[in-house]
Length: 502
Ligand code: 4AD
Ligand code: MG
Image (tube, rainbow, N blue to C red; front, side, top):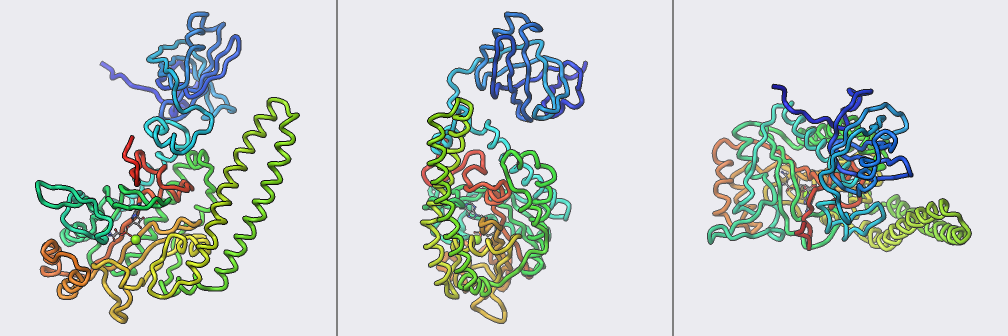
């Protein structure tokens, strides 16, 4: 007996001229007296389906006419190549089976506010842009596994309940673990180190949690991190690996997800630049750049150009509004659309104009020892076309496990990779302290409970070796490659301050 198989929209080139049955949902509909144009969505793409009264008869034509947005259907019809259609094919419908006529689908083609869309995230995921983002995310995930698996890394799952704070104690989510305190993990690194001493090269790929109490574009409370850890790697080898990995991911997303990037309106020329080697600059050089005249001039120019753009856009609004009064229906719709774009852009400009003076102050007043904030990273990365790696941060602002520079105790062998176009930190990592005595001192200095780390200290007792690793934030990578402003659209169901549903 032959197995039942489904046919999908993205395979139609195999069925040109043939009759097929497709399953999906109505994305959009246009109709005239004798024709209904349905846009079918099946998860793999969109397809224009033509229902003609003459071909199909009155009864089925009425069924087609009654279909609403997101009604679920099974359509049968003849596939015909058509260059003008999205995807290059059309379906001439011969039969329609309705699963459900959907009433009052809340997300209509008109514009909705972000809060409304977030509350309807479970449905919003069906929209084109969100669909494209999730497919880029999937490609990134696949590429990461491919990259590491092809290089002999063993994937490991670190625990989610843990007794150890890794990245500071201020962002821990505490849970009650049978009357014992447990935290949701901030990072799988410590467990990765144990596994690296068993397997040489490993990577984790799992959820991590941080009680981030502020709303920013780059922070989620639950996010996915990929953490390779390698025995016998020093900081330079760690940086080589990080830049190879990022070049590999970007290349695959560009070649395999060009359609999705197009839907997102991503300027791919910016991503074409992402080729190893990436500039490696020390933290000290980063501070020099931030406090330089070049940075001051760059920000002043940015401010000037925003002010000019603001003025131009306001003039455009005046002109458009005047024209709208006498315009015909078609032109009026065009004008409305443009006005919406202009107003959105004006809001962005206003935000920039509020931010720039704050950014400028933060950058120009930086002194050695200060941590780099989001805006500092933005300013730094604006000055490069590729990601950059900043290494050698002050040890005082870095985690307890970081190895210090043997020549300068004030400097830690840590590295952050900052993505261009203002995206900022996507990777944090470095070389680990391998000495038992030193690590023990550090744990005490950081006022961490030594007892909870006794197993970790064993790794320095039994065959300790130099080793390094890093953590890549998946959502920040998705935001960068998709060109999204905010990480909330990069994960199916984002968890942020104040959002637990859907
Ligand atoms: O720089 P972080 O804190 O490094 C670590 O956790 C190390 N233990 C990693 C390691 O060496 N194995 O976090 C790593 C990355 C950041 O660069 C960022 O991309 C992402 O994780 N990240 C977040 N992404 C979204 N929301 C948050 N709240 C994030 N915090 C960190
Ligand atoms: Mg970091």
